[in-house]
Amino acid sequence: MDISFNIKDILEKNNLAIFPGLGVFYKKRQEGFFDENLLVFHPPKEIIQFSTVIPEEVENPVLDYICHTRKVSTASADYLLNQFVTQLKDILAQQKELPLNGLGKLVAHDGDLVFEEEKALETNLSYFGLPLVNIKPDAIVESKVILEDLEEEKEEEQASFSLAEQALNASLSGSTEVKEKKKPKKWLFILIPVMLVLISALALYFFNPDLYNQYFNPNLNNQDVKVVVPVRVTQEQQDSSLADSVYNEIEKNAKAQGLEIEKVKDSTNVTVSNKAVPNKAGIRYEIIIAAWQTKAKAEQHVKKLKENGINAFIVEDADGPMIKISAATFYNKAEAEAELKRVREELNPEAFIKPIKPLK
Image (tube, rainbow, N blue to C red):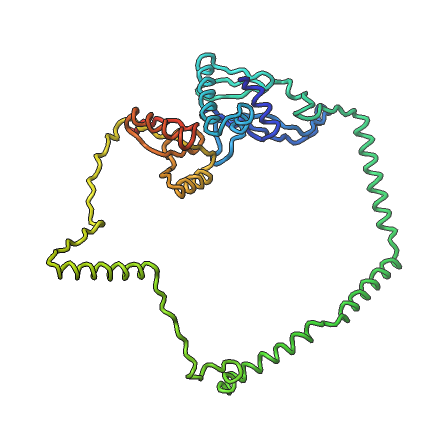
């Protein structure tokens, strides 16, 4: 897996590439500027930089790249990325620098990682921008003279603006204002009748409420109008009353024959012994069935799993950039492996065991 070309391919389509536990490569736009001392114009371009501060709640294009190129799921891509970062850390620990062909190199210096960009990137026309532009001194003088001539012509045009034209513009603006004032306001003719009707209705309601109720609420004083609300009997109540009547009839006949009827035991009065709590001081084994880049998507997935009867939950203390979802927790490795086999057969063939050591 050639890391340098992967970073370059990812950055051509995205603005960053995150490597959890190592850092993030990102593109930064450098504005164009003119160097007056060297008479050189530097056009705008994009440069690659590196930072050990990894942003949170941001989707990682590296995972999408691995999923697309390796044809694997997001959880498998997260596992491969973590393994790859571990290899890069081993190389930096041994050699103190990590060459990235075509990009530069990472150098470990006093516990920090520093990215040194290659000089060849500044002339890479296909990706990073345009070359430097040298400007001759004569061209600068000519451009200044042309700008001064244009400014003088502009001032002359403004001065030649005659008083007649100013008067004409003033008269045109005044005529337009008069026309705008003469526009009739049609909405007033509609609003006034509506307001009169509302005022009349309110006056009728306050000064003669009986007449108002006679026309607008005729059933208010009519005592003959009765509203009958039907009593709804649920199916459970019907079944319960039918069962009680049958039971009472059987009990009556049995007592007549000298038999005793034993009361049915209440099935709700059942005690369940508590299961022994395993030793939680050892390693915990989580059965990971899914992983997401953001917590919001992980919570939506957990909600769907619970609706389907799966008691899934988010593992809060799992390492790595992905938000992992567990289907079960075990403190015995053999039991966890047995459950993993069942989960792969029935739920997710790519599920795996995530061992988590307790914090001391």
